[in-house]
Image (tube, rainbow, N blue to C red; front, side, top):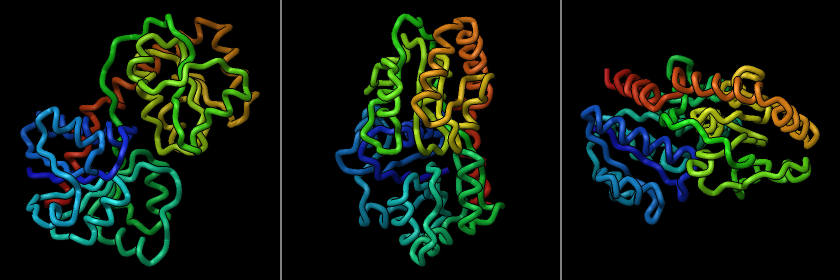
Amino acid sequence: MRILHLDAGREMRGGQWQVLYLLRGLRERGHAVRLLGRRGGELLGRAADEGIDVAPLGWLALLGERPEVIHAHDAHSHTMAAAAGRVPLVVSRRVAFPVKTGAASRWKYRRAAHFIAISHFVAGRLEEAGAPGGAISVVYDGVPAAAVSTFEGGIVTIATSDPMKGGELLRQAGVEAVYSTDLARDLETARMFVYPTRSEGLGSAALMAMARGVPVIASRVEGLVEAVEDGVTGLLAANHPSAFAAAVERLEGDPGLARRLGEAGRLRVSREFSVDRMVEGTIGVYEKVRK
């Protein structure tokens, strides 16, 4: 199958990592993949370094393509693909906030053959916007298998300028955390991962921590409740400094609980959130739209 992927992201955030994992998995399974990405963007460079067929995203490049399926991974590329529309269009929806309901948004959402939602919560947002349930598939993010953390490091969280992520909440809670700019590296030694956020489609960062057996404390919001099962694979907390402070204190004071949560989280990721599972679920959507 010839699949053209579009992604206009500037940075390697969670969505861009998912695109890269997907491109690798599709190529390993014998599919022909090509990526049109933002010129100078990190995803384009990383994909090119791995020998994946890439080109800068633009109208001339898009209109010159002849794929069997187009897969748009963000809002801007969705708009471009909807306007170009000659082959079945698959659109990934990763964010938790509601779909816009203006005329332009309704037009472009009608152009998609199928939507991939990264959680049941996100699927519900799409249905609220008028997308038929039969045109929505939930395909969870996948994260690579990884060695268990050494637990010799500190409490890790994400360093980000995203106003929807709650780094300030941890400061107010008095939690001394490592604000990571390289999560994959810092999770190798993390003893805990703390993820305050006001909105989340699923929470691939939490899944990365779980894959290493690191106990997770995360905000009780939207798609995160599908990634982290409270009291079983991690702890969920209200978005208030006292709630996060109490959850951190609970795990620091109960190493046995922290270990059990980490082990259960690691097992759940291997069963439900593997890269292979994500790739196979996505291929299933491509096969639907090509029938």
